[in-house]
Length: 110
Image 1 (cartoon, helix red, strand yellow):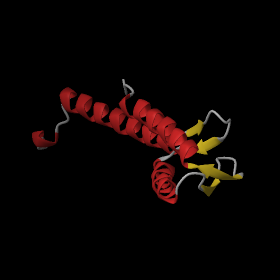
Image 2 (cartoon, one colour):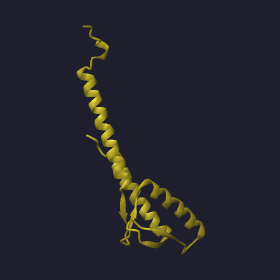
Image 3 (tube, helix red, strand yellow):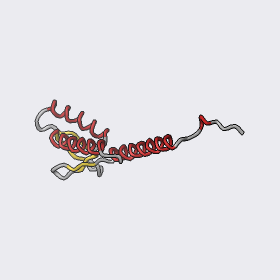
C-alpha cells in the first residue's frame, strides 16, 4: 500500500481551514446584518438602511437639493407606508444607516 503524503492534512492546515471557514461564516452573517439594517429618524419614521436603500437615498437627496427648498419625494418606509420625504430626513436616515453599516463592517469576528 502506497501512501501519498502530499495529500496528508496537517494540524496547521486543519487550523487554517477552520479559521477561513469561521471568517467566511462571519462575513456571511455580516452581509445578512447589513441587508437587514433599519433606522429610525427623529420624526419616528423607520427607513430600510441596506446598501441599495442607501444608494437610493443618496440619489434622491441630490435630486431634492437640485429641486430646491420644500421639495419632497415619495418614499416607501420599512413598513411599506408611503410618505413625502424631504432631503433633510433622507440625509438623516442615510447618515444613520451608514453609521450602522460601518459599525457592522468593523465589528470583531472573533
